[in-house]
Image (cartoon, rainbow, N blue to C red; front, side):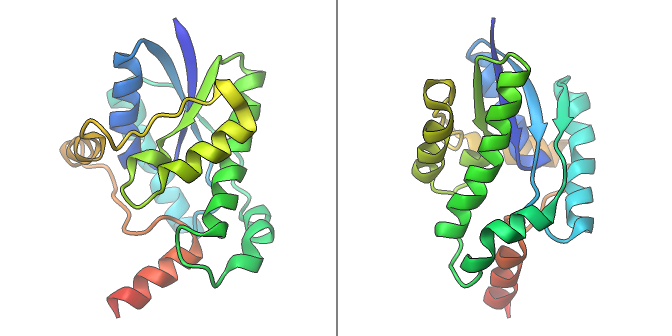
Length: 181
């Protein structure tokens, strides 16, 4: 069976992605690595939500190091960019590089990410970063296709998984607050 390491951004996004990969014949393990998430309390809520995913989906999930200082150093020059710009590409790259590195160390043939399940994320940019990092070992799957976003939200609601209202970084949080007044 082909093995894939799935980078997981949050519990909500994980459900349909895990299900789809399994239906396509993959053995799946998760990797929660998100130094972009701010504040720390939000990170903890998202990490805690994974315990439900772990139990319901019967999946091993590895937690990466939470080091927001590294993320801030990487993205600080792009604070004024709108969500979806250069800052997001750097953030995708940082997380995918870590997922790729772990996938090699742990003997996975492939790696991919739940990030593409969101209609707010540009899958093309994620694919560019993933292929640049891992070439053919990166699975270019747009998880929002085949009703992925709808399915993942239905499962998250069914199992009462915490659902955040912003991407994760301080800049997306401020954007969200500014839009909502």
